Image (tube, rainbow, N blue to C red; front, side):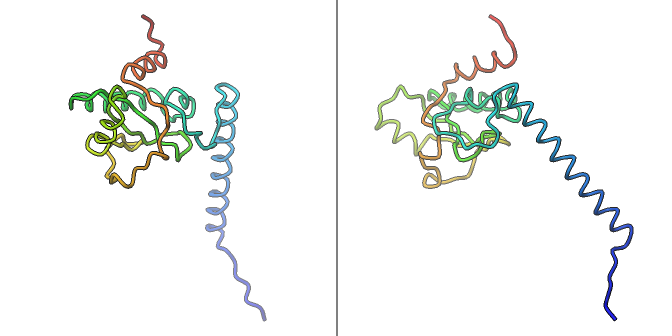
Length: 166
């Protein structure tokens, strides 16, 4: 005599419901990705190239205006410390909410930038916009875009996002 186990009907219904939910969610994501790709030229989950700015990944961002405004707020706070401010995005993700670093503006010499990098550099989480607790050794230059944006660049980008006209 073989042991035939049956899934209780309530368990089977729950399993079917979970599978249907997952299929609907995946279909909705696929349709959203197709719409974004056709409308905005969105790259999906392709890795970043290494020289992008916030402007370049705008259509990848989960919430472009909120992201740019939060970056700008952190840049303004950084500038109050007595530095110019430039922002670089992290390149290890797919650009949906990239981490970013704020550093002194590039109007300083290379040696001044190297010194200030360790003392005045700030990295932020892309989703919460809170400072990271990464050490200087945890943050390597190959993980950040080679291009940066100034405060004025980010302000102009927010104006473009919101449709502000001068």
